[in-house]
Length: 468
Ligand code: AMP
Ligand code: ZN
Image (cartoon, rainbow, N blue to C red):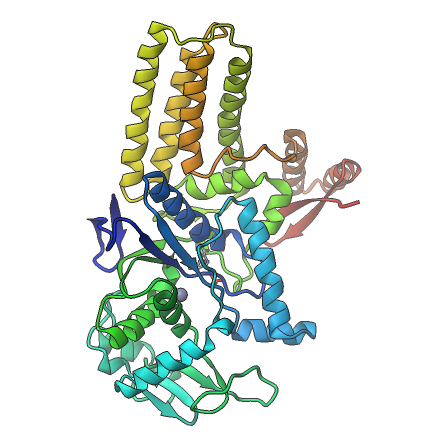
């Protein structure tokens, strides 16, 4: 398989450290809210990588952390009069609900910062002993000048980095880009842990260095996440881990492009996001998964209703093919495969190699999906109600084998918002564009009668089922 490695900016042949056990670490969510469709992209994309490697017979050890100590969690807890752990525990539970809906397999381990505090402290102590970190009033910083290769992932040199971060120079730091490994407690009621440097909590980057080595060990095969993590998060992880061990942290660094809204990154902080939880009120989870892998992971996707509808239509063609095959299989009169069917079957099985070739090319799920559609067209023209059961069974299993790698067609479709409802939503938007507000209100009432409410947001209209 070829993988585009951010570290070398090249597609490289993927050679695992150990063929028998591939080790993957994916940076997980900060748990202070439901996750949005942008966050879902790395979860689904790298889960598809895992499914593919497992399909090819590898055993995969897959770790995805939860960042459960963070300013955003603390702020959210304050707002809601809850404790940080109540907030993080809640959103970890909610993560699993949405991830399961999207058919993202549970990781081999889902470690949390709060459960790895001793290891984090030990890691920082070792960095201090080795001269890579220093203390200032209870804060510990990583000395970036000491790590010669700092900047190698994001391809920036020290001077650029130094001048780029002058704006918020903290004069207590030796170099402007030094980053915190440990933050001293500022207020008495702030969540904190005891450490050799007094009460405090870890900086963000250290957790992944610690958890990657604790749960996967030494040099791992693939470290992955969204491309916003290249700098500073992954650059800093490399500095911490490689300063400590003297060995590469990971051999391949994979980064997915963004899900955008109006060509701007979807993000919680900008407020331009759609939560998966809300999208699932309108679309079947498999439509969301299909949408997320219908583009190559290194191409940006602009999230829009139009694309979601396209995804739904495309997926329903696959579902129809599946139902059709099931039907023919059930009603087949001939048990045994006919000679001409054997020839057809052999021809169709060639699609397997085609499918594999596209996936081997840096996980090109977009082309792999096209191969599945080509296969469907061929199947449709090869089967009739005279086809034998054996032939139908072989085709069906083959088709289901390929779609399973993509994590699709695994569950019966849940009830979706019907096309006529969506048509009404579109008509209403049109009416509003034409400033025909009376008509728009009328349609809103019709939708309400049918059990749907509409919310106008800055990103467009959101449709929701009224819960009774
Ligand atoms: P966070 O919870 O913000 O730490 O993000 C979890 C994961 O989602 C990280 O791998 C991010 O890089 C990724 N991510 C965040 N926003 C987007 C986006 N708009 N498109 C794709 N990936 C994203
Ligand atoms: Zn990380």
